[in-house]
Length: 366
Image (cartoon, rainbow, N blue to C red; front, side, top):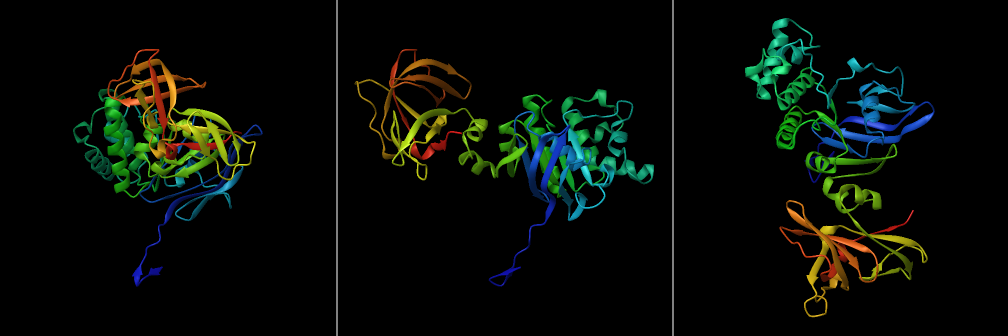
């Protein structure tokens, strides 16, 4: 492929999934899932418990047999068109929340487990990987002698030992405490990217997905409902549930009349939505602006803020990096706002609220 005299390289897709469908006892749990991941790319499959994330992972690994769909790695069909390739011949690595290390084997023996070749060659490969995860001094130690973070790195080294083209990770860091988690997952992903491994990470934690993924695929009820870069999927949610999955939200209900919806903050545009349609206007707490009602009137609104609305504080709490303040609107309904640092007004304090129109999402009610 050429453009302006320069050669443009095509991005090869290491893992391709088309129309994957899985069912148990006649009940569909994964429906028409299609994904592609390039070498060195991290895609996070994000969603609540029971939405089909782990089943999708097991189908790719070959542990579950799908009822429909095609799975390919580097263009090679693993299932869906001909005999199903067994798990051990797929070139797929697995890391789970349970590290599943063999307690009776040394660290080096755990990493070398399943490798082919002479004992010296397997130990040499184990030594190389343990050096890369900073565990060389523990070559002949046993799993029970290591911390949880060190065991996680041994599990990573073992998964990398056979040089898999695809790495499947199912909630791999949830068993670690917060102080260890960030460093170990950053180290893990750095190593996987160096190896050119395509990574599919399963998690139910939006913060982890935002931190780790090049792309996020949001899953609900067995289907992919939205896919995109973390910034785009956060700032352009597909629906109210997608917005709520990534953060707390405020919701103002209304009805469209002439492409406009009346709210306590003025009228909001709802282009393309038929008159009479009930809609939800969604705004995140960090995009609510608040002021004291010192002079009996609200703040001077900027054009993007629309009209201010009067409210009374019902509760305020300090939650670490910010304060969460909850309100009851004079015109009815509740709303919350977050404020950096410490801001704890007493219940009953009157204030004026304004919301950024360009930060609101308008969704027709289901």
